[in-house]
Length: 185
Image 1 (cartoon, rainbow, N blue to C red):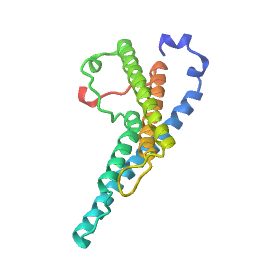
Image 2: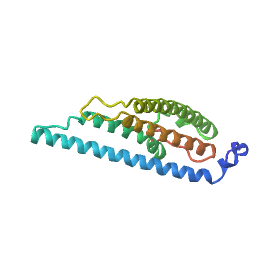
Image 3: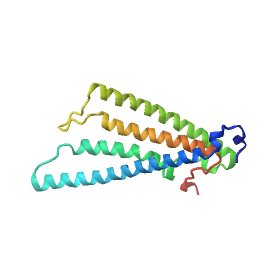
């Protein structure tokens, strides 16, 4: 364990964080599963649209809108899962060459910066969700989708990503394993 451990609060050293980390992992894997289902939905909607247009000279008139919402939700809901499984694309030209304590300190700095930026983005999205809810804003398409739904999905994905970053930070501080990029090996 690191020397940092001596001054840490009791909660960081006990099994409570392990349980919370496992719960966060389950939540992020569920969100990743929902993202995968959204990909299947996109495929099915496109195929349905093709059948309608070719076979029946008709359309749903909402393909581009719904697929756009699904892509946004899929992207942000999968962030926490990608970080948890090591699937996040990272540029680690310097970080990949570091070892030991300097690597751990630099990783903490990077995770902190990412966490702060993610929290800012989540805060901004939350204000957008609230504004769309209060105003009753809807899309300008035939479907008139309440805009708080797609922005809420993006906010949820950012919030889950921030949560995963927080627990990754705690794992690093506790001396746990760090994410390694396969490209640097």
